Length: 236
Image (cartoon, rainbow, N blue to C red; front, side, top):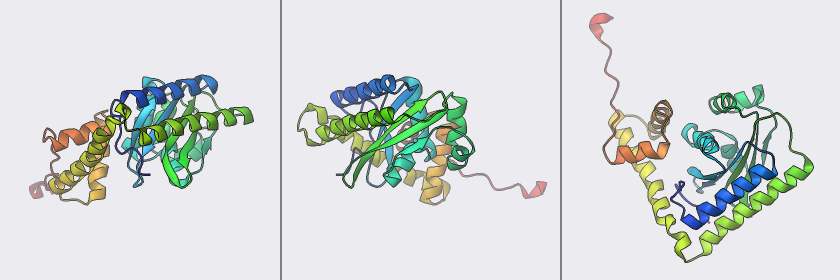
């Protein structure tokens, strides 16, 4: 199972996006959370947000893709829940870019639950809270239940040969577009692929734009990265 590659809100087919948003909203209410997001990821680790309970949470979730760090990245990589009941020094060391920013946004605790079936990792459900504290045993049970609902929605879209799958072609195209943009920046700057992605992420954050928007503009040649000019020897 490959997951939904490069998917974005609106690219997932109206039915699936609506179901995932409803899961997020129900989870936010059921877990007394400030917001809940669901992310889907491909087997190669490329990921993009699928749905969120509200626009503020959507932005918080998106930042994980811009920075390449955060609870959903860790939960997806390890296949284990990430239960951070307080964004203290441990969280700041673990996510040195992401954690301070979401803390400034009012988030005080975050809990991430992998969405998986056997060895197949489909994504992560992230729960954000505006207060410090662990989830109770009952709340943990509820969180796993909401994660199961999200998994079922994703499996349905994998199986269905219906209009609900209409967004998958766009999602795959989006995934390829990111790598095409990365290659173009590599050539433009004369750097490695890894450095090209770092530059794209830095630009997306500085301009407060989603990474996929930056990639689309690069591929369409509306955005070009220029090499830094050599130092002026006369001034040295």
